[in-house]
Length: 78
Image 1 (cartoon, rainbow, N blue to C red):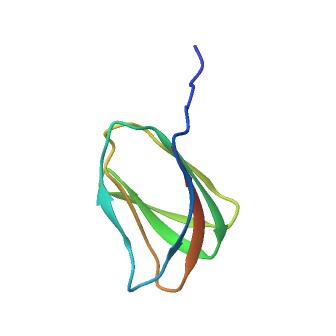
Image 2 (image 1 turned 90 degrees about the vertical axis):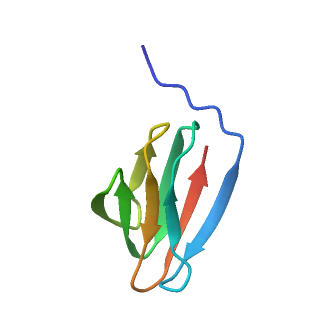
């Protein structure tokens, strides 16, 4: 079977060193699309370098967060 994502929100986020997206978890599956910049995405404690045009799939109950040393602009859909 395929994976279906029903989006209840679609938001553009700006993350800076002063405003990291603090790791958390919840029951909703999300897709993140990097628009601009470089960042580090943490998924269950494992860090992944990401950059503009990367797509990140976050499964339910996976702890996830995003930080950057500069500025990152991204879309969160879930």
